[in-house]
Image 1 (cartoon, rainbow, N blue to C red):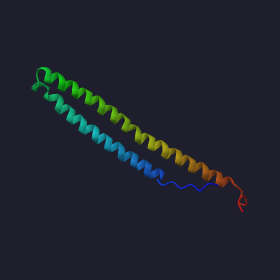
Image 2 (cartoon, rainbow, N blue to C red; image 1 turned 45 degrees about the horizontal axis):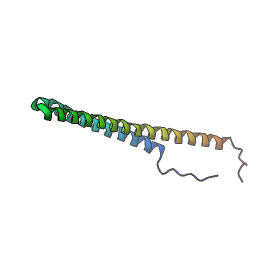
Image 3 (cartoon, one colour; image 1 turned 60 degrees about the horizontal axis):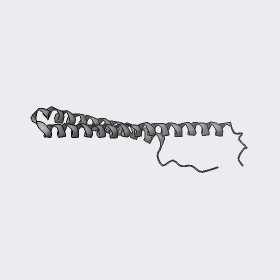
Image 4 (cartoon, rainbow, N blue to C red; image 1 turned 90 degrees about the vertical axis):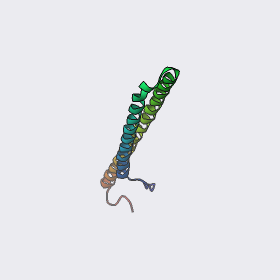
Length: 105
């Protein structure tokens, strides 16, 4: 039987997933504030500079939204892994309980 040792407990994975979600939420909130401020300054720009600034802002916005979307996948994956580990531990404990007392000598 293999000796398996997890370096990170499922509970720690769940705590870190919550922490990461909060950090992503704060980053998104900060980005939204920055975007709104930059978007509100559009009336100060005219001509080619206004067009370039608007295009650059929207391109950056799309990139940031893509990155934030990818980052949001990480906590979900951590929670999935924690669930898999917890389920495996539960099944292993059930199998051990089902063994007769003299199964391993």
